[in-house]
Image 1: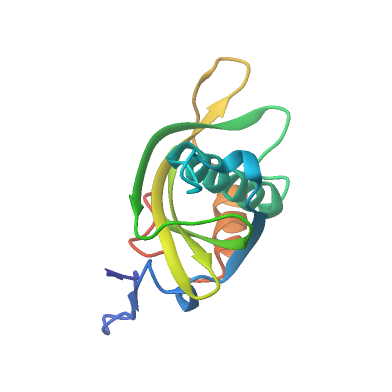
Image 2: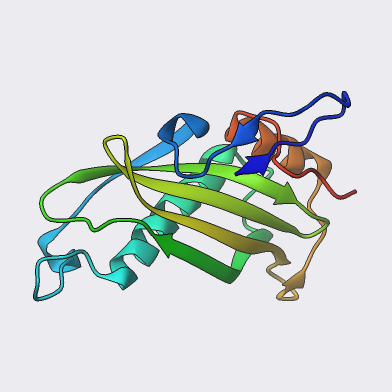
Length: 161
């Protein structure tokens, strides 16, 4: 479990990345037949793709200061923990929140749920990139605010300035 950042000095609530109620933003995906292996389980690469779709929608729904023609995001790290199998057919909900906003990167935390059952969790690091130079670029204050609003909660470990 993670403790969320708190400027008040009081004990912050704990964030359980395997608990559906910990997340405020969700993206729904449908498991497709081609997501399965020969045994009828959803493949590990399909988990990666499903998390990616939810993460992209989280960034896009955050608004214009976060994503646009001049800047974008590059995935540089992914860490997935598998908790239970998924089978066809089913609809899943993927919750996304922010763990940290750095100078030029964000760390997301996600949970994949079949109803209330957590099937997998993922942490990923995205670097904010200037498309003209293809290099890391500082995240603007407007983008930080938009991402924080999109998360619908305080950051879990804080903001680097």
